Length: 293
Image 1: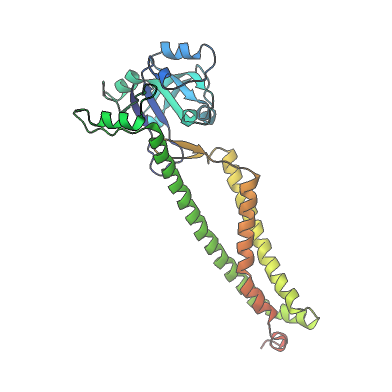
Image 2 (image 1 turned 180 degrees about the horizontal axis):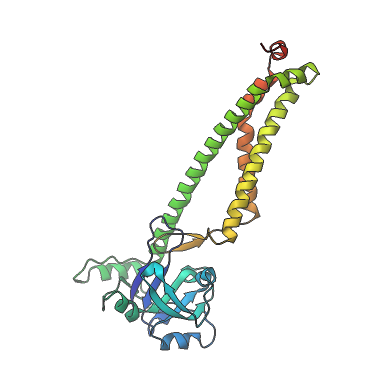
């Protein structure tokens, strides 16, 4: 089954919109669509009709029967004829339209981007791919099992995750340095107060814990504010998902990632306070209480 693909740019984007132009007579041999009764018939009968994944429909508030114009795709218009219920697959984010409809929009009749081939029972997928690749096509062809394509996509997403973790690690190091520098400046400005506390009998350990506690509290408040901002952006739909050129994954926002974030940032803030706390606990009492000239 030939498939025509039309999508927004997938370079560094978190909101990819993908239209798949398919042959309505053949597509159900390759995809099982869970739609409400009657929706498939309406989709099959409407040349400009579309089946829309449940998650992307919920993201934009689309309903069956609604006419949609996508300015992101040069004003492509279609009518939502059905909502594909979520199954935890890529279908949750895809928009299916008629292949000839999509070809006419782009003025490239007869041209498709890839072809789905359904292997007969018992046929080895790898052997079938080799046989297809050896056919005398007039264009270069790459044939691979669908599982291999999904694996490649997941590897791309894994690269994004690794990059994100590296960025987070750099941010944590910068946070540690920034908190340490801020607390160091604060302890230098307040060394007289620490001298008074030592004169009143406060042990060095208590002074050190005071400094660490202050810096840790600042880090915790900052982390909490950051989590609230990100949660608000997620609720507002400004942070939605991460995508490669063929698959979209929702961001999961919940108590566990927030708890981990708060714990990591708070720990980094506490570590950044260790050196200033040690300096504050070793303040020279006589020098601290000496009258300023």
